[in-house]
Image 1 (cartoon, rainbow, N blue to C red):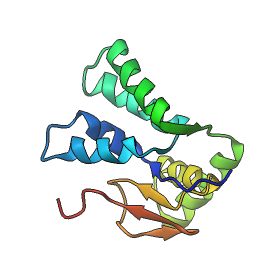
Image 2: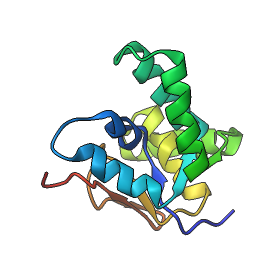
Image 3: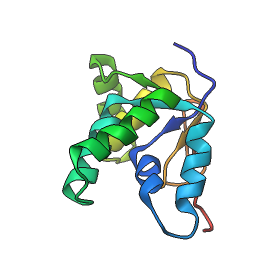
Length: 135
């Protein structure tokens, strides 16, 4: 699958809920333009929203429905797992960050939006962009 849209890490989705210095507006603007997320991103969002933010399942479901309407959702399959482990090992990332990179690469996304990792870092033609760098 080849995508020209960006891939979104979980933290971008979580900023939809932020009241901190326009971060929700930035996240909303990015997501409204469309993009790609993996099932891992949806799972991580639900986990953090429930456990750390105390949201109820209906609220979580409502937000995830919007994300799924705006973004393509890709599975985390064995090829994602294997590439993700390889990336984590090579670059010293967590397994979960490796999986995010792998999903972005396997879908051909040119940009990975995330607040994690180094802004401008490139793996296999995909560049990490932190939309909050300098905020």
